[in-house]
Structures are given as C-alpha cells and as structure tokens.
Image (cartoon, rainbow, N blue to C red; front, side, top):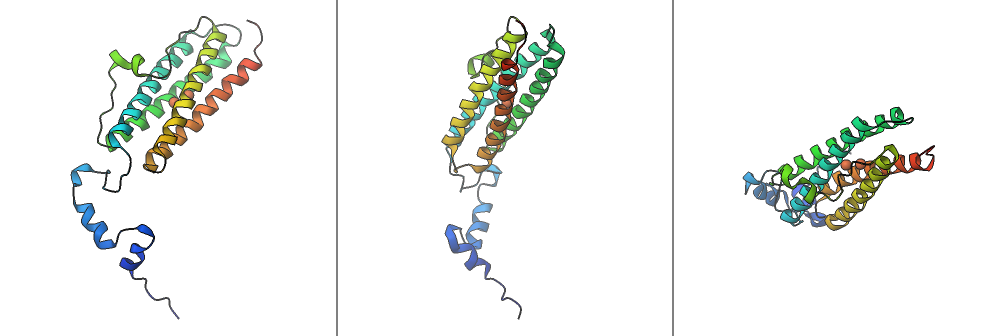
Length: 190
Ligand SMILES: [Fe+2]
Ligand SMILES: [Fe+2]
C-alpha cells in the first residue's frame, strides 16, 4: 500500500547530482568559503568585478536622482519629483542587494567615492532643466538596461542566484526607462 521509502543516495545520484555522501563530504571542506561551494561554476573574480561596476553605477544613479529630486522646478516638478525620489530609493535598494551578493561571493564592495564615476557605466549628468533631467535619466536607465542584460547573458546558468538578482534589477530598470519615455512623449512646454 504505502510507497517504498526512496533510497536517498540512489535518488540523489540520478540526474547528475552527487550522492548524499559526496554532498556531505564536500560541504565540510572549505567551510570558510561560506555560500561559495565547489559546484559554483562561474568565474568568481570576474563576477565580483562585474558586480562592483554595477554597484558603482547604482550609486551614481542614486546621487543623480537625488540631485534631480532636489533641483526639480517648473510646472511639472511636483509630479516628476516623486518619480526622482522613488527611483533614487530603488537604485539604493539595488546597490544594497549587489553589495550583499559581492560579500556572499567572498569579495568586497568597492564604495570608494574617488573612483565612483569612473567605474560607473552611467553618467552623473545634472541636467539643465526638468526635461533635460528626465532625458539624462532615461539615457542612464538605457545604459543600465544594456549592461545588466549583458551581465545576465555572461553569467548564464553558472551562478543562478546572481543571475536571478540581476534579472529582478533589470526588470525595475526597464520600468524606470518606460516611465521616463512616457513622460517625455507627453511633455508639455519646454
Ligand atoms: Fe538600479
Ligand atoms: Fe533605474
């Protein structure tokens, strides 16, 4: 009647998964590496470098959005200010996730302000008026979209946690770009 209990070692060996005994033995080795185990298939140093570039990009975006938030003026300023602030906070949240992942992988988040703009993909453009700010933000989002997509393609299935995190961020960058594209399309006045 009742199902036979599965032989865990046998089941685990199927489909390219190590046996339970091997999994247990491997987990005990190199425990100082924390979440990075021997099945981690990506080039860890390369992934950490990419994540640090993305981290610099996010911080430059945080700073640019705050600058735009504080400096927004004109007829549409109230409506757009809310978006600048929301984006600043969301870019900050992206930076937070990326920095945490860098540490999980055994790296160190590079938050050195001296080199931030050089390492960032996107630029810190102040924008001369509200419309120009929105245009510069749209350009920065489009840069972020391309760089995240390329990172995702590079990492592939070799580090699915990082890939999934980047996919979540990419989705939000696309929303940001879409909001600003809509704003520019319906822009009234200068
Ligand atoms: Fe972001
Ligand atoms: Fe964004």
